[in-house]
Length: 152
Image (cartoon, rainbow, N blue to C red; front, side, top):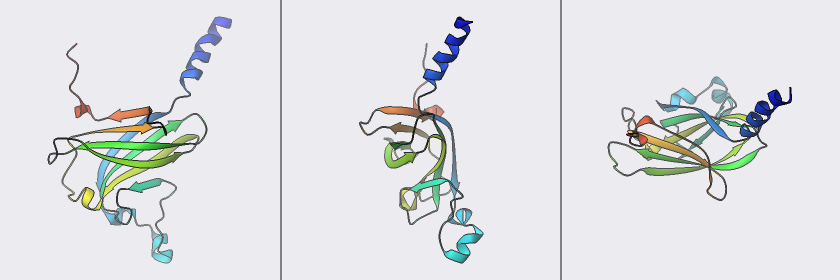
């Protein structure tokens, strides 16, 4: 019976790391964020989601909906989003401060205003790193085209 407990202990220890569960990308116009409550009080109602934008006063843009799992306690991280588009050969980097709660957090990272001016433009490739205060990468996710496939 003791050997049966060992695999569960190992997986529990491995489960203490921050992970990016899922990333969805899409263009969103400003109207898609407006909820009825905003008509009454003028304040954006995020529905409990964390939304961070490159230009906070602009809602229209290209968004990365990210779900992260943080089995540890609350922590502050930085989200480093690198984007390659058809207009740029080198990645454009956007960094967002982020407070993660314990458990799962859903965040929308928006490239808004002049940082993503066209609805029909999609990224060629992207990579998202969640880093600690020392710059150590805690979790990463990338698009299929971010790097060349291995030839092995």
